[in-house]
Length: 308
Image (cartoon, rainbow, N blue to C red; front, side):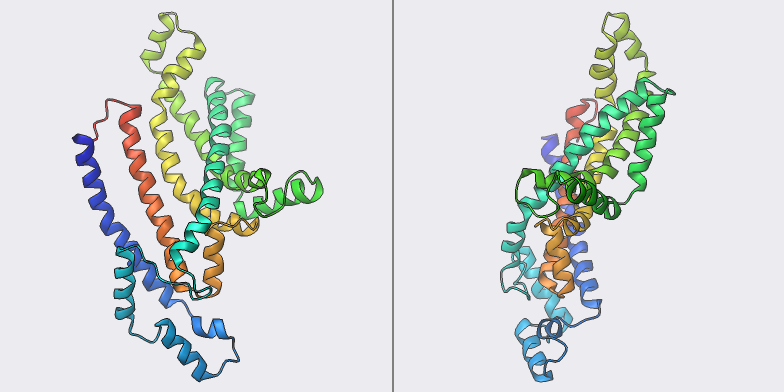
């Protein structure tokens, strides 16, 4: 019952957040200079043709009327029709969503597989060369933006060495370069957080007590200290998942990855209001949902935390 009450309370709190994001997205996108009808017809289009297309798209109506229609459609799951393709926005996003999920999960997997071992080695061998090397790599990962790292990886591993595809989603190796580019910054943050939290836990008395009972050093570190340091790591992973989706916009554009991020960039250039709104709302809803799952995981990882 406590979990159900927690879920109900959190879901109730997400409603104004989502409505606020929807309102902000609608307002900002209509403040952006440019006319979708003129962008579709071209600069040399006749004024009468532009006015006719604006009327057909519903852009000649007052903004409050357009906002009301947008909200009514959003509540029932109808995000409208793309100005550019004439397809329902929901179906366009659903078609691109699997590619974005694949890229996001691959990036998270890269980050976890790199960060956790680096953080453990840095904490266990504090002050050693291994510690300094791991933290230097973490600092480099945070400092290098993915819009620079992505092209660099493509030049080295795709163009020069020819080991991996440079763009597209033709086979499973196509996800390697985008995932590494997207997961590098998250891996750096996770490595530093793993080191900091693990160092704190290793100083606790229960770790010494476990060693005194005959538990091996490896068992005390992994089975006791690391497990208790997972809560802040889960928090970082949950919060950074939204950042991964946001970073996917740039990464998908660099590697021509057919996901929601690339769809968003294409829609912005064409002033495709419904598609832009739908893509941004999807990112916002995903961010809220991941944070909700993160809160629920707290109770699983640490029974001392009560969700109620």
